[in-house]
Length: 85
Image 1 (cartoon, rainbow, N blue to C red):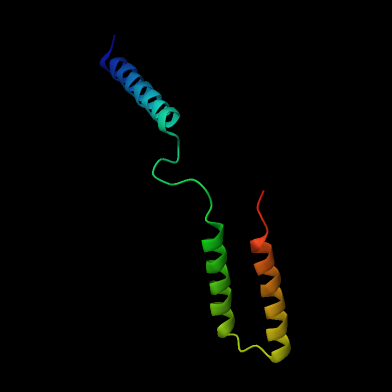
Image 2 (cartoon, rainbow, N blue to C red; image 1 turned 60 degrees about the vertical axis):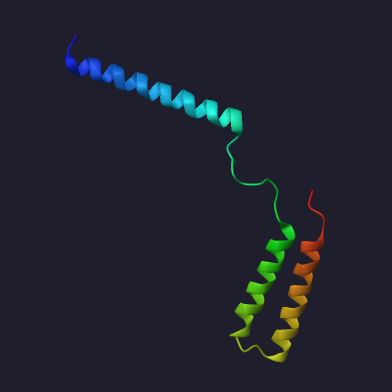
């Protein structure tokens, strides 16, 4: 058996071992280790509304546009308050 063939076989075995160890780790601990599960809906909704307000400040909207924006923002707030399921 040639040296090249031995290196190829040894590399294949090492790769197989690494893959099996990786799959074992994911199966044992789960893929999201270190992150707590769940979606922080309230925090994200507040952040989105804050970003909207911040973006609208620089637009110099007219009164009718401000009214439409407040209407849209109100609908969005209601949508965020709806239970997810």
